Length: 338
Image (tube, rainbow, N blue to C red; front, side, top):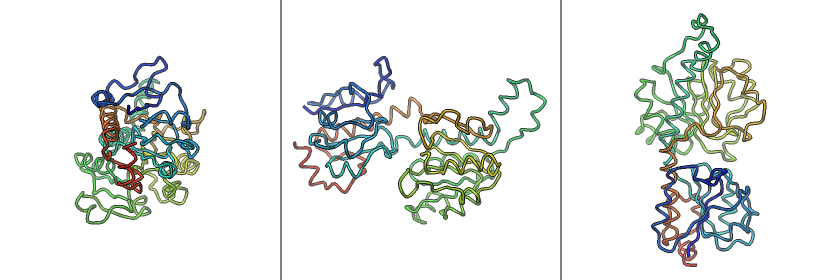
């Protein structure tokens, strides 16, 4: 029997499914596969827990090197999403465990959410709502907004989300998007209708800066005090990636000093956000608790992909979207026979 564990955070405190459609019917259809939700919430996951399963579908918990000490049964950790900074991928490789992500499943929802924030910031939506609620109707002329038309979007990290974002923004008649991504070549950028540039040029010329790269040692504090000093004082930054990519203390300073027009973030350097975070008192900041892109459609697509990956492993196939590809196909073919 191929046994699959789903981390406890897929359930409400009452024990019911948080997401109404996450592809469990895909697992139901696989002969010789059974699944269950972990009995307790753990983070990091413990070795004693992991040794009970052949595969884990994982939402939020962390995995460290200690998580895999003595673990021989586990074959795969399938992340329910695209971020993997909570998983020690190198430790997984050393333990002969593959890690997958649901690449592509989040693209549309995150791109749409980014545009939502761009419009809300540029049209000063929150402040206009506040004027009505506080009886300050006559102050409306102080909050004239701006269109997206003829403005420039700068995208940091031009993967699936960034590409989807620039495609969707074509309807708004913006300028040619600027992108910073060392892993995309000029030919591909031209094919996708964007202009590849260096980070400093992007920061200097963009009216909106969308952060869409993963958090890695390479991108930690990628945008810090020196980089923020390059940004236009009329520009907005939108972060749907990870909090640590932008140096939070430097960003707070820039916002307080009106060095940038505003910021919208779904992510924080420390989550949940600390009580009385400086962002809470800023009228030019929009916040969400790492859920701005959460939709029924998003979780349906993520869930179906993650469950399909588990089914592939159970059926002796190489699953889609493996992160630690250094694990050889030959080794994996032997592992799944166990």
